[in-house]
Image (cartoon, rainbow, N blue to C red; front, side, top):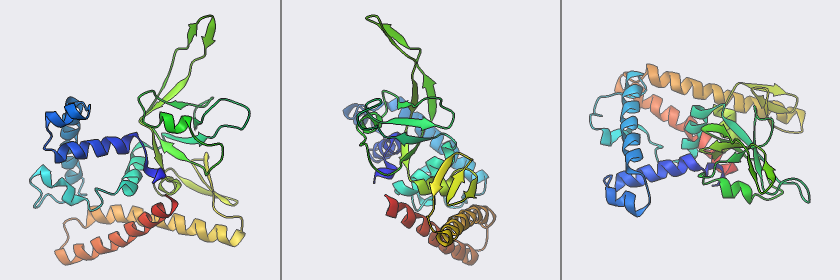
Length: 264
């Protein structure tokens, strides 16, 4: 779906494909991938695995081989839920898509961040560069996360001065619900939920619907916080209690996934 297309999802897909091919150099050569970078990612993944065990998020009983790490995550192949992790990890590096205006203004779309005085563009090596350039003049609101921001020096060529521009790296488009559930501090303002006094999401035009929809979203956020806390506290609980907790958590995550899928 459109809400999970992005550079970071592509990197994850490349890493997983490389792992399935037994991390071979031939696979990297055939697909123009940097084997050194992939090996470094593999080392970092193992370090993060140890850290989440130390944090109590995963029990280390029966997980002695790092090849079994995927068993710790029943949603490891789910791009929609992975995008929520990306939001949680990179927030507040958020940008909104600015669509081109018919008959005026710059050609193609632009990305706007909270701290930018002017619109930004994906960096030249971003898979999202062409997508933003070719965006239509009409359509629904779109949001993305990014890893870093850099500004060009500006150039002068053939007597023409090109002003400095701001570029965003590792751009990944995400669902608005991923932002609402895993982003910043929400606040209900009239008929919208506002995150960090910047990102505004209209809930409804009807007063009663506003209260109901906002309550559902905010309540789901609270449930997700409880899921994380329970997961840490109950990791070493008796099997029966842990099994009940896991089933309850699956139902909550299932609700999140359905919301994301309906938008995508």
